[in-house]
Image (cartoon, rainbow over all chains, first blue to last red; front, side):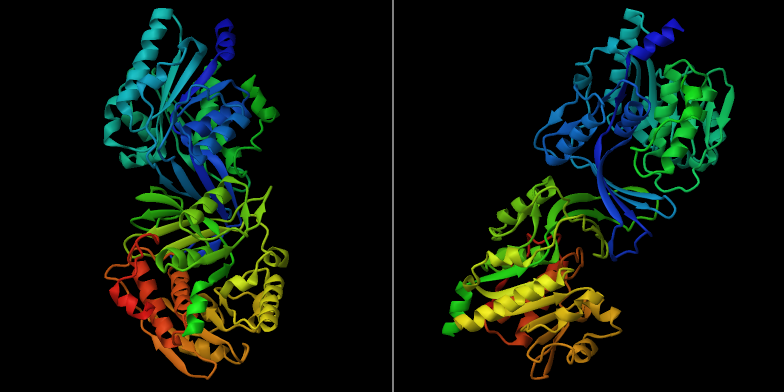
Length: 315
Length: 315
């Protein structure tokens, strides 16, 4: 318990993408070549890592730092201010000059909550080990990596965390998210991670049809100590511990689904939050599903407050 | 001829909307709820009036002023700089504080050139007569109005131009564009305009199935001296003079259609350019169709150069 308290006082670090989301809420998905009006439009920071960091900070009152590339352009500055306003620590983010910024145009269908994303990477440089070298690793109890194209650099970062932990006798937990299947992810899959999140897209592209199949099918491909967790939207989530035990949680859909954008990132935030406090995997994925379900019932992240029943898990 | 030369030395004024277009080029139209990558993404000033002004200035070397609402936010500043860079005069544009800026997310399907537009007005104030009062009307030979929701204010502006022209014995030509049918447009339809442009959307919504039907069907509804012009994409354009004579032009499609965004605005720029120089209506709509066709063959407006054969009409 003393260890859990110490961990709570440290930061959670999230490493990955921040982008600009231009979110259009529509009352039906537009036909091709149509010229249509959105019900509303808002700009919001987006990107898996940034969303997870915001939920950890804003909803779960956790000290959370985000390491992501920013730029000096107006989009990067907008995202920077948005993150700061929400209390996410971004003091170590590299700020790039003379380059674009990843931007997504998103259509939220307010009738069914579907989110259609058109993303452009533009030419913002990915994070490198040198960006990571600036960090004081003793500050963090948990480091979460969004699996991205900079696989070699992420592997170096994870190795650095492991070496540091062993030297300093510090238990820094590591998690990695794989949202989509890409051939270059192969080596990253085998790293010494405590938790690996497998997205539904990744799972389906690998030929799996259920979350159970996914965690069982992939278990021999990951490091022997990695817990595999697979969230699957309306089917809830399934986890496979390194003891081979399987546990699952149902989904907790809201009465009306209005916005599913970032639901997966919210799930991850909820799970990391619980596991970082030493909770059981089963409880963690249940809390993640509850939080993600709640998120689907509201527009954006701002109204995502934790209620009394959630607090049972938090306490 | 002397009159035409004098007219050429004056400015063309375009009154209407500038917005921010975030243009995603895709290789197919995304399915609902998909998370997809754009081939490329670019920010560009958009809005019918702004597009027409840019083509007049940049492609047709005409001194053109745009009167549109701007704001102090990053989107408005981006659009302002983009317009200035392209040589459009914007010295009289009101700059609003504490409000949003109209922004469109656009998907260009590079295979067929379709442009799907999701537009949000946000809460930028529309132009009012007081904005128009700042202008020195003796500077302009032609004033083009984009038909928008601020119908009462546009009617007052047009009345002011007509009164001024009669007082000063100046022939200031007036054109009005109706892109979409809206009930509030009714009174604007009857103003004393020299040229009225009727969009295909407007025509179809009114129950017309061809441009010929449109100009004939609407001729009794407009002022007796107004020329009606109806561009209709791949079917070219038809005009009906106040002498009831009908003339038409075929479309001039490029070998490969890659981007139809702003083709209608380009047509209008071409027609105004010609009529402002005293050319015949028939020649003007042919030039408009040629210019619009050329635009559909390129991405954006920057490569829209006028070649030797076009110059025959320009000279």
